[in-house]
Length: 273
Image (tube, rainbow, N blue to C red; front, side, top):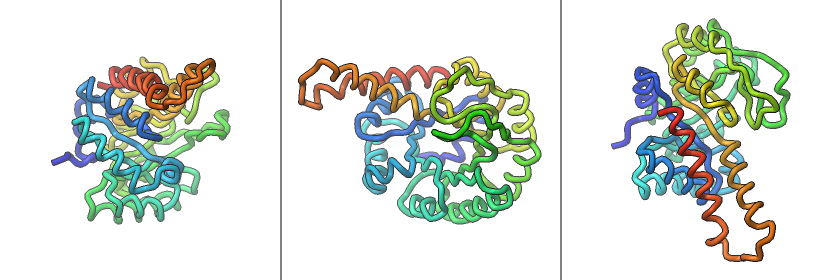
């Protein structure tokens, strides 16, 4: 019987540790993530975005992740990452996801609260973990110059009004790669952790120095998201392999890229374990 993710997050919160959450985009990236988790004997959160769901198909993507967890013997959960609508969230809940994120971070606070509360109420009967986001964590293509960090006061209000299980906070990270090393606001993070008792989530984990991630975990982060680095290392490895290569057998070309993903995820797991 798999422990509900909301319970597992509470467990690691008490232990001042975190769970690694990685996105997968096809069988090869999934295999790389899961072989790393198996090698490290570590639990893992497998994440799907709306674009990945459209690419692979919702039921197919979900079953691929679920079957992979069973096949490799890894404790893990399937999570909807950055669900942009309550309709998509509802679809994923009914399909059997273990966890969903409703991302209303770009909405006015009152609207974010109202819609997140709806998702929480919807998910309760399914015993599903619900994550939300508060503040501005730049998405791919958005400005990283804008700063709208999460405040402890807003975080406490949001959690109390919604009943959400986990909260992604804006403390200086951004999605995608960084042009310069991100400076995380650890003091703010500690204040948010003191103001609310829910596990906190770090989005934009790709490219954040290991020491900063470790410090964030000690300050209250219980879930660390990594996506961009997985796509990047898989594709960069393939591009290098195919540059002067006439091989057409994908079964010979893909394994080195999958191995690169495995090594990357192993290095990330060492940080949060």
